Amino acid sequence: MQEIRCGSCSRKLGEGEYIALSIKCPRCGTLNHLRATRPAPACRRASDIGAVRASKSDYSLDRWQAPSGR
Image 1 (cartoon, rainbow, N blue to C red):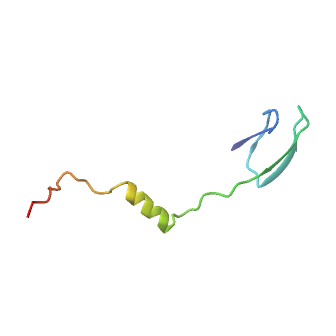
Image 2: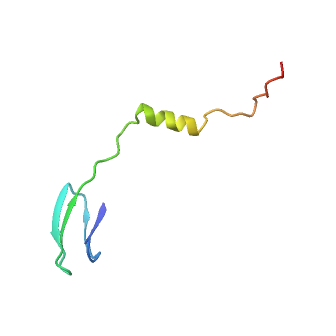
Image 3: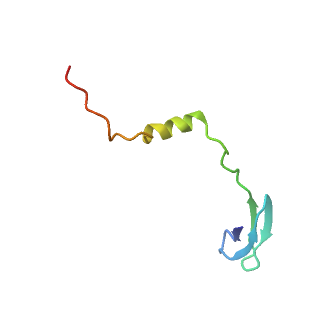
């Protein structure tokens, strides 16, 4: 569950899950309008996978030999 706080005075207004919510703070009287953000995509795009592979190798270099001077 997500904690819901006033944007002005930071008083805790509640906890829960929401899509859209308007709630008035009893302490300072500010009307807080909250909307859910979009979730991260479930699968990676091809461009994201290439960036991960470029930064991190899946293979060990333990048994690699230096190229000979031929």
